[in-house]
Image: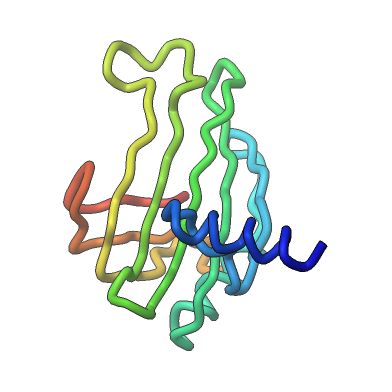
Length: 139
């Protein structure tokens, strides 16, 4: 049994399988269009970022028609990976040709941006990005 498990692990490593995520899991936040705001996931990923600790957070927003748009923010300071944002708009039925896909941004900097006049609500602005654009905003 041990040798079978060892063989499976060696095989996965040899095939280039990604190692399991070992950082802080900040969970998934579900937010409707302008109706809700949950600071828990945001605070978790921000605290990890400012303290240089690996973390992952998923924000699921919805289009006007109710189509889910999941966005994942991964922070991996080791190895120069930095901030990676993936936004999956493939379920957006009215997204238009070329916009129904997964967008990926690899960014160097993240800042907090207050939402309107309420400083307790904030989004993230990611800059110095490569991939699908020079910047990304997470609401």
